[in-house]
View 1 (cartoon, rainbow, N blue to C red):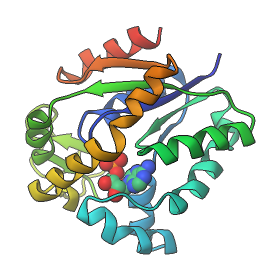
View 2: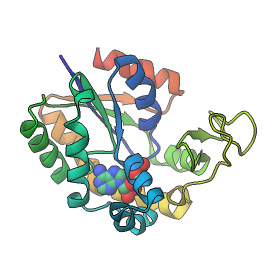
View 3: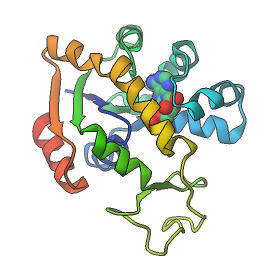
Length: 215
Ligand code: AMP
């Protein structure tokens, strides 16, 4: 059975970290709409130009801008054995759109894995997150620091704090999460396809809990 998995949880819950490891173990692609949008911003594509201001303010980019890129990505051959979607769907209408995309391209439905983390843990985690603007690697100054301060282990570029990881923007992202994204859990729960895992542990512990949950 394909591992079609959607990762749910607030920004900073560790979805990207879990997805990177799990994607290697399950041999399925990690598809992060946040990463795709950041790449579009870096490259200055029409999508990136439209998305940048909304992303910087902590809001959600419009569903229309995302549907095409998500559909195109899920239709690629490497998604046939499964995929890990990170950051999509982000609201109930995107969940409906995703059902339609999967039907259109003839792929199975998804299971959702939710990483459960309290807001105060998120605020302190995201405040200490640093990212590599060049290769996209992510560090946490407390739990997973780079080997030399301020420098990416993988490519040597200088690390930065994402504009949307500043505290005022984090608070706005959490507000948007509770209003728009959290209701998705009930939707997946009602369909019997929600697995909830505590996300306030070390990355290795969260990964094994997710692996146990998906079986
Ligand atoms: P992330 O890296 O998943 O936290 O995404 C960073 C930002 O990209 C979000 O705060 C949104 O502005 C935007 N974004 C990512 N995925 C979506 C989505 N599915 N729908 C709308 N906006 C998104």
